[in-house]
Length: 370
Ligand SMILES: C[S@@+](CC[C@H](N)C(=O)[O-])C[C@H]1O[C@@H](n2cnc3c(N)ncnc32)[C@H](O)[C@@H]1O
Image 1 (cartoon, rainbow, N blue to C red):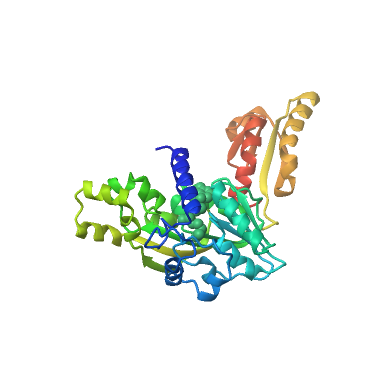
Image 2: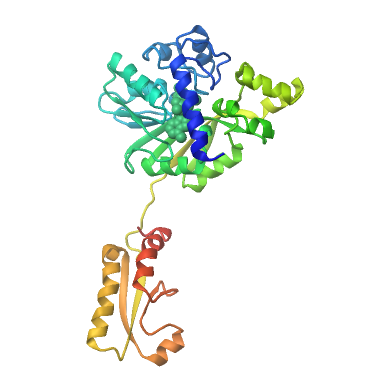
């Protein structure tokens, strides 16, 4: 199934959840029909929320959809800008808002319009003035580069088809030394195909989950460092088995209780933290650029060529050490270069200004000079 189709099913699923106020993901063991039910409260306490926290958020913000309490483990400072990925009806965003205070700000992003409008209503009725909810996708965050101190997320990234894109976006919006604190569902071993293909299991935060080591590797690949699992618990599969359609699928597969229990053991909830470390750029290091010009070129050819090259180099001039080197054809042959070309760090040759323009920012970033 295509990513967009999966997202539509997830969006429709969560629109129904918020409209009915019931819980079909997270660690809740019932789709009970009341967001304020004692069952949701008990379940939230089980995954790390205190009575005080539960009573401090607007009614209807806690839909029992989380699988941990990312706010409890994250150190949130007054004045911080916090981003909640997949903020739902706003539960964790409201908890974070109390910690960042008047000088801070919390932004919740969710792709389900019904979630966003419920979260906004919740904020209005309880006068939370430092929380803002934005409709958008985690894969294309409606947030500028490097403006966030802390990202939290609760039981959401498992639902995003491209985890890599989700983490890349998280990395982009974090300030240098910004932190990520995520509660999520991952797997210890692959699930059977019939579960992977069940959209009920997808919305239930199971089928979209990936192996724990793959999840952590994706975080590392996009640039996160200091990746640490702070907590790991098993995910009660009865969250799914109370769903009649899912139960029917299991029956059709003739799955025994033992097989079901075995499968349940491989689905776990983790709390993971990571940091986007500030990259220290050594300003004294520069990229060596040798601009070779044929010795016998006429003044007009020479200046046209230099103009083209300088047009490319000028935006990056502070990162570059350049030298112009007139070259005769014998020297050019000995150096195995064409007599008008640009040599980067004595190795990469460019005869076209277009290719140089295309590659230069990437080379500077790779060499950590920019
Ligand atoms: C399991 S609920 C968790 C809600 C909230 N974090 C909580 O703990 O109450 C998942 C939420 O993520 C949102 N979501 C799923 N995929 C998303 C995506 N690609 N972009 C933005 N939001 C997404 C859903 O709309 C839903 O509100």
